[in-house]
Amino acid sequence: MSTEAAAAAPMPLFYHRVVPLDLRLHADLKLDRATPYGFAARTNAVPISMVEFSQVAAHYPIVFAGPEALPLAVVGLRDGQNLFVDERGRWRPGHYVPAYVRTYPFIFLQDGPMGALYLGIEPEAPLLNTRAGELLFARGKPSKLLKTTIEVCTAYRDDLIKTREFCRALARAGLLEERSAKLEFARGGAAQVDGFHGISAAAFGALRDVTFLEWRHKGWLDALYAQLLSQDRWVSLMDVASEKTNAQV
Image (cartoon, rainbow, N blue to C red):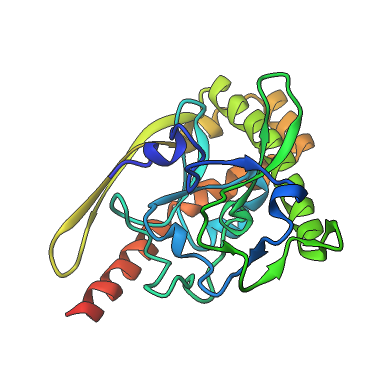
């Protein structure tokens, strides 16, 4: 299983066709979260921002992958497997749902390198229809739901800008190293996870004082420590995978 597929897809993960949200075309469109996360059932890694690291680290390993070595929360041990979404599209209770998942099927995109930003939607998303759910527009204006969605998507995009800066700094300082994880199950069998990078604890320990203080001033240290601590969550993934396997026996 490789985490790179989630980070380097031609279209953003979960999306196949994105169009600008338009009152003239989508006046009757509704958001129905009756089966909220079924769309995420076949991914093993989800993009996250550094703002989420502390919450993510409590439940999932955090890795870096793709051309820009951006962060991902690992949610499965094999391609096409999300251990935290059940057959009814529900996320595992008590576990953090990454912001990228919560904002689907909405996403901010840029019209060309220097173009304007627009709020896009996946028009064929199973959560969108004209029959059931909450309207995106009310009386020709964005509904309360849509206003909240715009705020959340805006905050997430701003967080991603900071995250890219953070990841570039990690790479420049030589803190990212190639990693793989081979996990042996107590009842036999194994899972191999590769194609990702992690933070080198040794390189971090050797970081120059001036750089350490700069990162502390920028508020990056919490995210860095959270990534290191998140590596304990590989065992948690194995526990969930074993639980699901036992339930199928």
